[in-house]
Amino acid sequence: MSSPWLWKPGHPFIDLEQPHTSRVWHRAIWPGELTLAIGKIVNPGLMDILISCIINPSMSSRITAEAERRATRRLRWQHPAIALNVTFPPMTGLEDFKPFEGTFTYEAPITEEDVNNWLGEVVHDGMEYAARGSVREVIETVRERVGAVDKTRSKWLLEVYYIHPENAVEHAVVLHVSHVLFDGIGAFQVLTLWLHQLAYVLSHEDEVLHWGEEHDRLPPAMPDRMAIPWTPEPVPADHIMVQKIVSALKRPPPNVKLPVLNPDAQPSLSGHLTKTFPPEFAEKIRLAARAHGCSILSTVFAANYLTLLHLLPRKQIPDEELFVHIYPAGADLRSRYLLGGPERQKDVQNWEIGLTLGGNVIGAYHLERFLDSNKLKDVWTVAREVQAQMLEQQPYQATAAQWVPAIIAAMIHKHATDFEPESPDHRSVNVSSLGLVDQHLSKTYGPSSSPVFTISEPLMSSIGPTLTPDGVGVLLAPYTWDGIFRLSFNYATAYMGTEKEQTEAEKEGKVTLRRYVEELVRLLERLAEDRVPEMPKPKL
Image 1 (cartoon, one colour):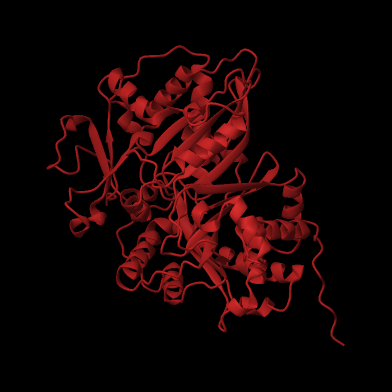
Image 2 (image 1 turned 60 degrees about the horizontal axis):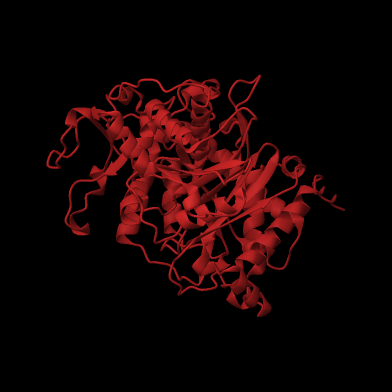
């Protein structure tokens, strides 16, 4: 049986005016993409990803604004998905909104003028946001301005901001990619793809592209890219992943959270903080985690929530089970579960744009065990428990095409029928690990014998989060590239406080985002030195 998410010719909604339907293709939105697609319409920009890097050209390379446009043009030719739109049936208001009928739609350009018009909408001069400053200062200004809550959002799912300060040797680029189409690893991959095109156009003349043929490269939805594809058989109610989601949905909200400094503030800017560790740290924390039967992810997860636990004022701690959980915690499927296996994914020519996530339900439970203790062994205990959860659920990621729709349906039903917004005074810190990203982001571009340019300092952040009703206040993404371990913290500045507001609050003894980050970093540094697990004492 054919998948219901195959690409089809023509516009999905015949009552919409569309003059060139012969050049239009569409496919239904897969349930794993649905909540993000709805968010694109209801709250544009929220949870989108900003990814940037420094570009260091060779002595013979000259990067211009026109080269960046040409690179984006070629990227669309090779990967037309970057020019998709999210479309839903016409509606007069939310009362006749039909979310389950949403589609991705692609319209092929007719002429190069159409392409140029599109480039004018998606390729931007980042220097318009900051006429002065170093490359790094301009990157931060672009991030802040693009991440502003009041910024007008376009319909496009990828936009490029190029940065070229006058007389500077270094250049930079910031990509704004929609979470509807790009997960965290996908953001790193599309940055690599764009940089490859930039290297290509710097050494090649423009070629004639026969627009209208590129639709053959529109990528299948995730279920049609899996080694174990989707089938129409319903998922049984007792499937382990369905049961885990149902159990999580029945729980009360997590209660180990970060206090919010200004819960009544109006959302404004997206805050981003990256903690970069010394070069030797990544290997130290990996070896320490391995010695204790954990991974870096489970170690960061445990350290994060025990840090929050010990920052909570005792009078604010409820007399009940203290726990946190994340569902679904994204599980990247590229490394194991796609058609062709891991070997196929090693070749950048085989990469396809699109969400490629399964999901886990992971949590740290009964944390009240550690209220009167603050030892490294507590972290390792929780980390091993989290690691066991991930290992238990790992085999089921191979069949994610089957059960992800069932868990998304359960979550949508819960939010539609039995959902109560949480108090804005305390908010969750969600951990979403990207792991080792070297295989997804190259360091050099062009011929290996004479690279056109190299890159450095890749930074990833999210737009928002604002204090959404689901309780998320901060997103934490650990990742390692070129031997450097980083923690990316993303938050809403108005709620968590400016640097000055946090300084004043700390003088009053309040818990701030900055203090939480400092405590977490110190704990991770101690854990990295703790390579020998404590042996149990023999019973007498």
